[in-house]
Image 1: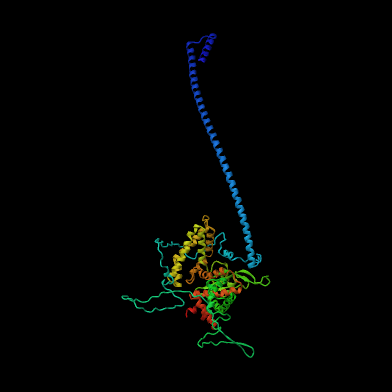
Image 2: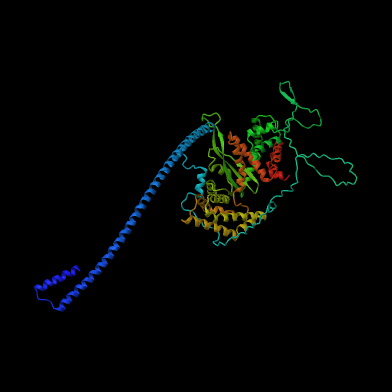
Length: 618
């Protein structure tokens, strides 16, 4: 309205100074002013809406600012809480680390003290250790290192020899396991008969008879039955001969014995081992205690006291040594029969600790050294021989067993020790067969380590063993065993083994454990030697004959700990040879020892007449 009045006044002033406008012009001018008023009103409305929008935005901004400030305060308080909690946990962890560090230091000090004590104890027991420089013995490695070199477990790329069998690999399915629980499946029927549980026997049976009594009226007599009572009589009997002594005219002493009973045929020194005061029965018991029961001397002393026998330990040892010298020709005969041409030998070795005296070593009795003893088994001839040879102080190397074999032409079966490979390389007439039991053992170790890849390898090896069990259960001849091993299902199992092992080693995504990789490399690098057991039905799938034969010696070593001299090792080798050979023949070892010692005492020099096989034929 104010603007309108201003326009009208201006219009009146203009009309006063200029000619007046016409009515039409005046009306147009008023209309233009009216349209401008409407525009101004619309602008005012728009401006009011904009102002309202700005106010709402300001309110929202204030709300968001207040919310942000609240959240900021909350986050700061949370950060402060976390910082205080972290500082608390850090202080606790630092105190815990400090305590653990102190405990580790105390344990380290205790370990150092114990190590020093053990070193001093070993020095007093075994003498001062000497570290030979590697420059003098660069080619000499330990037993484990040589085995690792041969099986190729340290190689980055596996050696994958081509399988000699066909590439066809039909699936081998085993019969499903019946989940019905049973107590027994009569597995003893496949082996030796155990006999009825009521069957008993004793070395001496005293039978006491009953007299007949009058039965009550109306009773009927049925028969007799035995009611047994077993008692153990443990004692050592001494027979003392009272011998007369006289001196002749030359002052030479003589002895005489005439029994008071003319019918008594017993005479002095007639029933004792020469050079001892013991009978063959007593010597046989002592050998059994040492070799089969593995009783060391200090425990044998306790046993002798319980049996009320008083005798020096050195005397008993001397009696055993003299008995072993009597049986040494039999041991040599077993050795000669063992390595006949075309024989099949299972060989293994183990260590022992021996005290050896060297000139100028500054000790009274010598020092203890780690030496090796070898066992050679001829399973077909049922012969076992223990070898100790340390003339040149290299019993760990291949010289002792190579000298033992000499001009042998045949087959040897062993583990992956590199010594046997060197022997077969030097002597092409010897065929080397390797042991599947070592492959199976390495795979079992890999299974225990948690490697899932073993599931594709281990069942196949177990399938090979199940086929061998079938051959034994069916009592197949060697020719039939060879034909069974060469059938297509065995070939398929071997092909699957070779292919799966190669695939796992060449696959970068297989993630093999160390034990699994070692097992696969051992199998592939020795593949040709492992397959040779199929060449003859007399061959065994593994080297278990030698492993079982040498186990008693290792048990004896764990009990006796060491040998006081090399003579003691040789005596032990002689006794183990005879005892294990007798066990191979399935005879009563004690009775056989008594028989063999008596044959030698009676002057029998033909060893072939009192071998375990000859004793069985009696």
